[in-house]
Length: 147
Image (cartoon, rainbow, N blue to C red; front, side, top):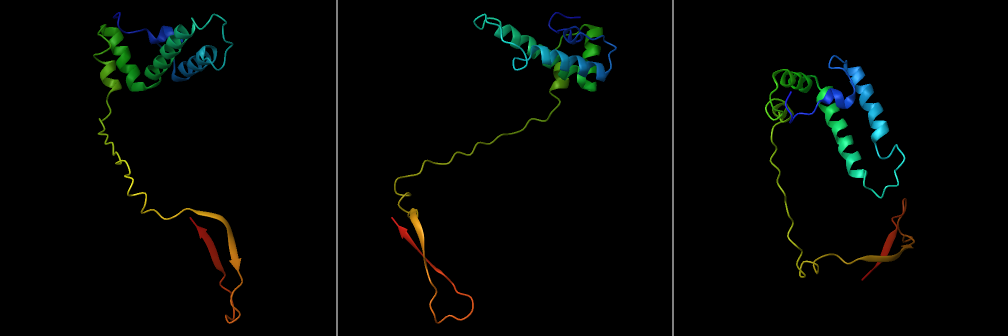
């Protein structure tokens, strides 16, 4: 095995012949013990926080590789042949199609364009009774005050 590739089975404390259920169980138990939200914080001034986060990321990366059957088989092949991690497991991680991203920026509004906007309505709405000449359903008039 190469020195560039970590041993994901050792990180999750499972055997290479472990089933998907055993890998999930090991991942969840390690996540409960190492996640900062589910354990007591050490009063060391934050010096262990970076190491804890690094270990947590290693656990999560191990689970990502070992939980996917395609990535796991590529990882096992690279372990047997001793090739570097960028060769086989790196290519299986990037099997997706690249996506073009467009950013549409709106131009800043000019001071003249603010004058074209309707006025702001404020105050309570006043209701007027309908005129007496309308039989049937009345249509109320609403008066609003504008700035």
